[in-house]
Image (cartoon, rainbow, N blue to C red):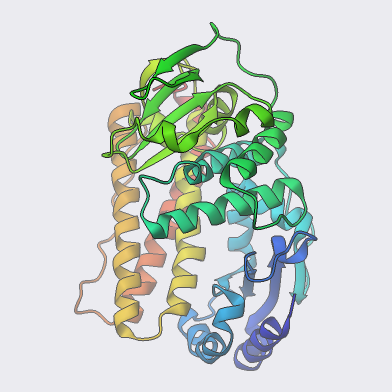
Amino acid sequence: MDFAAVDDLVRVLDQRLADQLEAVYLYGSATTPYYVPGRSDINLFVIVTDGTSLHSVREAFGPVWQRHQAVLGRPPAIMTQATLAQLVSLSPALSHHLYHHAEAYAGKLAPGSFYPDPVGQAAYLVTEAMRASTALATRLLSPRLVEQAHHRLHRLARQLASRPLPDTLTAAQLFALIQDQLNKRVGSFIPGRGTAPLTLRRHDTFNLEGIYRDSARIIFVIPALAPPLLLGIDWDRLSESIDTHFQAICVTTAAQLRLSVRGYAPLDFLLSRLEHVWGQDPLANLSVPPSMACRTMARRAAIWANVTLTQQYLAAANPDEVHKVIHDLQNRLLNLQLQSELLYRLQGFPRPDSSEPLPGREAPQIQRIDAIQHQLSWWMDHYRALAETVDDNYAHPAG
């Protein structure tokens, strides 16, 4: 890849921040053989000393973003070394990337900071595969979401194949490649009573294991099929049988669904938003360690505080765009608070003490950004601490 944009970023930040700039980490596909210019993401972490002003970083970064936005694709995330260590401890995907594919573009990698979590990484991959499977049947998606779904599917396929893939591959071919790799990684299929055909309106039959739904998605649980059989499925015709009030169709296997819920994404299950509607129920009697729910909550807060907020804020070109960042992050913070209340009511988790209210619209935008980041960090710390003790104090929750 052309590193001129990253060189310029490091030069400008080094001039502006001086001793406050500790390191710049480049990670992800940009450091791998399967990097594809114009398609792969360029992921950067700028590591600063404690007390460094995010607003000073934004002032310095603005001209760099104007020059290199098309190449960089997204701004770097800004955080301290200690915050990165906390984030890595909560995110198996990030830990995997930093352990295997990180490069110190400036400064040095902190020794011993990154540890692989094979089980957590596998749970993340099957979760990502289910989300990416929306690209198989796009009738229910807007054009923007179709593009995002195909990007996610292609990215995951490249990652699992560890090589560049041609743009000519269809969504079905990419999904078959992904499933072939995942079936080798996540173990054998969960024993069940066999499959039963689901009769659709067009009198097609499709061997499904089961069906789930939530407020926005319908999830098909399929057998762990070989790639040729997956390629024989007419996903478009299948989608025509689905009510249009669903926003997306997702596809997974029973083993992958169990691994996803237990090892990475338990909240929809624990909060009774994932409804089993037909066929076998591989989630029946599944227990989820309470600590996993806490880690999920902490991970969301950590990513929103240190990645989402800093990247969006650095990219905001004017006060109106900063206002949109504030509005988005306030909604995420509210979502976190609502999830916490539901965990208290439905699963008996302890109710956290309310954090201080956010400043109002009349407050300076700098103050509002700082307050949102502070509150998100508070939620991260709360659930990280709770994850250390909750398994000893609460029975394993089930949906």
